[in-house]
Amino acid sequence: MPAELTERLAALFQWIDPGPGTSHLVSDISGWWRDPNVLAELGPALVVPYRAAGPTVVLAPAVTGLLLGPLAATALGVGFVAAHKPGDGRLPAGPLTWAQSPPDYRGRRVDLAVRDRHLGPDDRVLVVDDWVRTGAQIRALYDICAARGAEVLGTAVVALDCPPEIAAALRITGLISAADLPA
Image (cartoon, rainbow, N blue to C red; front, side, top):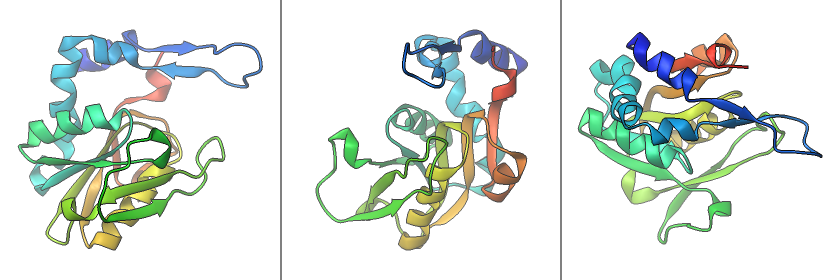
C-alpha cells in the first residue's frame, strides 16, 4: 500500500469525546469518506493481498461496510453482498442466513443476516470492514459463509486494532494499524 494513503488515513482520523457519562472516546472516520482521493484508493488497496486468490464476491456488514464493500468489489470486478443487522431497520425480504457474533469490545452480541440467494457454495468470499478490534462480527460473517457453503479467503479492513493472534486466525489484513492513528 502506498505510504501516502497511510499518511492520509492518519491525518483524516480523529477521536471524539461523546460527552459526560461515556467511558470511552469514539473513532471518527468520516474524514476518510470526505476525501475523494482516499475513496478512490481504498478499494484497490484493500484487495491487494487477496487479488491472486480470486475472490468471486465481497461481503461486508452494515453500516460502513456498505460503503467499503462496493469499493473493494469494484476494484476486483466482482459483486457485493451486504450483511444486514436487524437494528438498522432495513432487513431484506426473502430467505436469510443468520449468525450471531461472540461478544464484541463492548460486550454486545450482533446479529447479522445475508440473503441466501446471494451467497453459495461456488463463492470465494473476501470480507471487508472499516475497523476490527475483536473480530466478533467477522466471526459471525465467517459462520454465515460456512452455513452457505462459501469459502472465506480472509478479511481486509482499513484499521487493524486487534491482537496479532486474532488477525492471524481470521486471516485479517489492514491498511493502517490503530497504533498509527493520532491519539
